[in-house]
Length: 295
Length: 295
Image 1: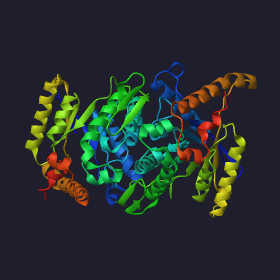
Image 2: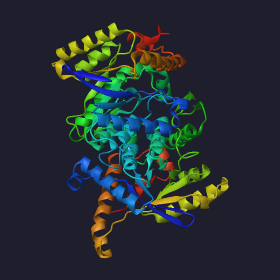
Image 3: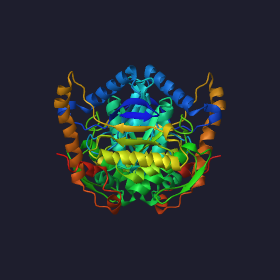
């Protein structure tokens, strides 16, 4: 994952993993390999390690804060991010609490990447209607920021969550709150919303429709300006696949199979529970259809 | 916290903390002090450190697995427990995932204490009806055990949660699953349910009605026997307050104020949202009323 702000580029690794027991061994070995790698990244000066959240059979992590805490305890300076934390599928107070704890316990190293979650299957598991996805994302993020920044008790009367005189603990170490990276890949509304709130942007550079991604970034910057923020003060992070080998020819030959594996896995997840919500249609059919034309 | 099995007694510390900034300092210092203490407990041979879950202003931890992961990373052998994980207020798959990850990442050191949660206020925050508390506890635990033990996809058609061909990852390191301590203090139904499932028992020895606690333990053992389990193979853990000082007189004089602080805090939490559910009346008005007659 690369992060760009005002011409300065940062490098990190996003663990948005798909697990294969025959390749990765046991869960214990798999996690240990990841943590050993993060220790090396810490020593080599990588800017951040990011952990994805999904709730399906070794696709990313069911609990990013637990693996991020394990990584934080074994490293000194590398920042720990989420790529992304699924706001609509979790109670926002639960998220505010666990990520604030992670920020405190990691010495203020949290980069909080947030997103809506694109798999209908996950919505089914968590009993959340897809048609509420955008609204829950916006309300949930609002509550998290309020929990992190309120001094003393606060109340919130939302459509999905209600709080009365709620006193939050602990305050995150980073003030006023940890950097938030809002995800927007192909949905202009998400980029406009990110800009409106002055969040940083996370996008995926590996989707086939790169022109659409470019448009989304333009929407984001425009929205920042319209809402009194300076685009050059905000970061844009982008995910793409990387594979290293002694020669470029070897890297392409070997690496392409892993990229294809991921796209196939991705496609299969989407196929097992196809989107059919009005919200999904309204918002341009989302990222999961971006690969519809891929082999 | 002490744990008894077949005449052998184990000692641990339960961090079911109430936080006072003037005494504990910043959240970062507070957590660091706890973790330093757990490191010492690890070196001294304590059996376990347990972390409570509550969602209110420094009362226990919003996320026990995050603090337990921090403790696991800094220790070698001490076991890490929850006292307790609130099943009805969380999605059971989320709990199954994060605690399985903790078990794997800690080298199989999880002691999974579970409970219903006794504060109406927490139910309000999480939008869960108190009248569903027992039923959610039973169904949630059932799903967690199923997630931890199923080989391959499984389905679950419950009243609160539904899963279709769900494939869980990662399997906990401890097989067939980490020890489960089901909480029962004053509610015989909870003890009978714990015995029926062959779980270990967690109870509180500090409640004023000690005769009722004794009855609950008898119910538990009877239930174990009736369901084909051997009580002598099951552990019973009990919580009580401890305060060390050079002399007993000094310990009582100084320690009593902290115990009273806790009871007052406890009472205030209950008072801010009084129970009124049928379930609560049916189940003997719960632990929170145990202190009603206390100063």
